Amino acid sequence: MKRLLAIALLLTTACTGTPPPAPSSTPPPSTTTTVPTTTTTTGINAESAPLKIKSYAIPVDGMAGIGLPTGADDRTAGKWLPPSPCVRSDVEVDHGYYINFVRRWEGEKFRADQLVTWFEDKTGAEVIAKIKQDAESCEEYQWNDRTMVVTAPVTLPQMSDLDASYAVCEGDDYWAICYALLARGNVVSVISVDGGLTDLELLDKLRIVVPPTAAAIMAG
Image (cartoon, rainbow, N blue to C red; front, side, top):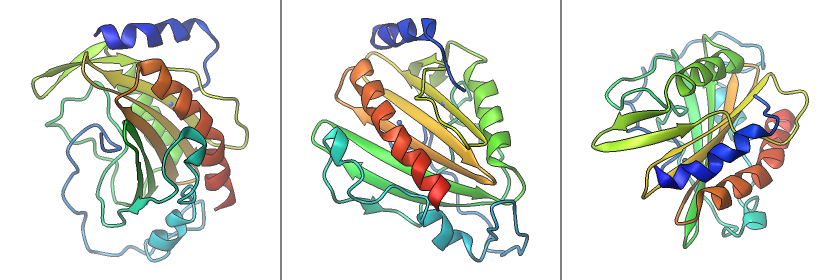
């Protein structure tokens, strides 16, 4: 709990509406293999989603600015979902049918993950609104045998043209992770940073990579 007290001081500044592996719980089982044909507000359907959402990801050399290698591990088969702070780890938040893409940058002391998810039945803003509601419903919660302290919201750089954005941090005395969530149409792009750094160092690195994350989702 001591690790996140410093982050809480940042809440006195103006906030705009925001890591492990990227999400904070065990990846859910594979989604249905049925391929819907609905086209959503970003012009994406289930057939085009795998290639399209990859174009929303930061380039493989895009984390050099925060000291991570220029190579990345792409995990297109990953079934992770956006984070769900304050929700018990045995409860799966149902966001409906989705397709996602995961990219990871691994360093010696910390790592970054990007999760880009297309939702068939929900907009990205609706998904972020649910995460915001959950994150601000508690100050701490039990995740397996750990007590996780939640700090929400935390400040993000000013951004325009996105449908929604939000940032949240969570952790305990041994580990912490910070997430930024950005929405455009039916797509949510989550960038997360975690590892062997102080909470404020993780948050500083997250803020550095938020602008290129926003640029990638807008240009995709």
